[in-house]
Length: 139
Image (cartoon, rainbow, N blue to C red; front, side, top):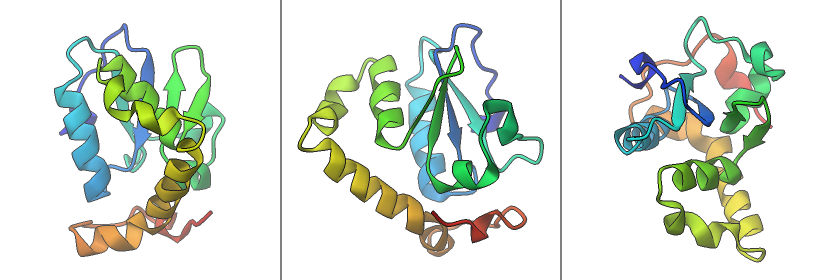
């Protein structure tokens, strides 16, 4: 399980992901498998011990979209998290077009659409539970 992976002390970006979302779990598992240098760390926001306040975020914020936390505390979110993560994995070329000025806003729009509907979609694709009241959050 991804949440059991001990992060390398040299991680550069921590991804805050929804461990109950089947789509999110699959993407994070893929990244963890390719994280040979240990530059990424992963934290499951559905873990009962997770506290978004440690990152100056709220439950609503972390449940609405993916967030990435740099070692120095800077926060990125949405498509930018994937762009940075894939770059750290040495696979930035795969998502490079998503950073282009005309494509980035379109990619962000579709990511936001996915993020908004991932909870009900997840129920169709194996989301086993919803942590407490978190599934009620919407942007």
